[in-house]
Length: 240
Image 1 (cartoon, helix red, strand yellow):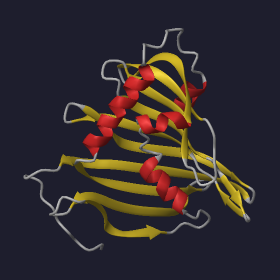
Image 2 (spheres, one colour):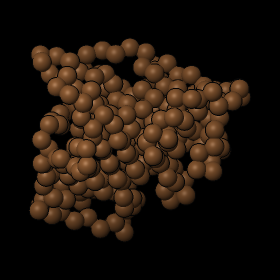
Image 3 (cartoon, one colour):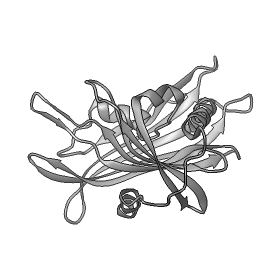
């Protein structure tokens, strides 16, 4: 599945259609509205990381978080259960968890536009939706920065990004430390008939460590979206 999407992304000589006027500005404004809307929702985020050998998984990491609101209306995260790590070679770093929150569910909001060089690549139909295709590349990579590099598919009607495919950059090589990041695809779906929110991120990639290549799989599921309001039930339970 991932290889199919990669093939599409790498062969994006899709059409010679011209970019609509002010496309990037309009997409970024729509992304800002989507971000503001998603900030009003409760949801559950499940993260699974698997180390893959020749036949079966060799190690794994599991965590489940809920994004909820306190009685005072503050938006917070809490673990549904304690994370379980049985990884043997992979070490999850602060950058990995930053990417899970900010790069895998990437939003191209107006404040991020100056950080990227974005080229219009044509149009394509994805999941029966006519889309514009954008090639997104960082303008500059500075120490401590985490940025997205890849492609975005924009619904022509709503100007909503419905899919991204790419990678968190840069890789990190410092003090004997080698921190590599997989290529991934994030799929969004329309929630409550208006905005598209992330529902699935998946990656199946081989990371070329100096100690030897390591194939890994990443799955992030975003479920149970529910708009916060008087009818929302807030529960606080300690991690199991």
